[in-house]
Length: 139
Image (cartoon, rainbow, N blue to C red; front, side, top):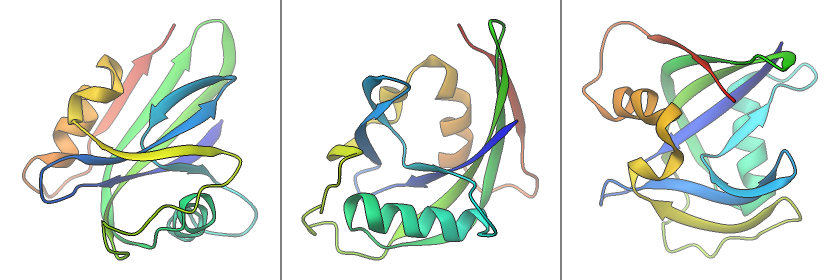
């Protein structure tokens, strides 16, 4: 099972930080994410990854949701842990893109596909005492 951290950073207009990147061989807008690596914990991995990929600094606030993705044709599952995060760099900071990140933008919450709608809806909603678990089957 692959484990990835996903950051949800919201600006004052209610739009989400997104990166246009090559993911699984195709170009698409994604929430910033990073795969767990080495001995680093996920929040540290996410902070480092955003700084390396686009030059933005974030502060992780809390775990907001967990989602397991399954694809019938692929044996590997992906466990995504969604973190609420705050942008420390000013929003006007010009992104410093690298080879993985093609563009940075602020997108509407409905821009990330039907599978993520319940997760994003929960993360953007009122804070709760528990962390929900979402399980989806893709493709």
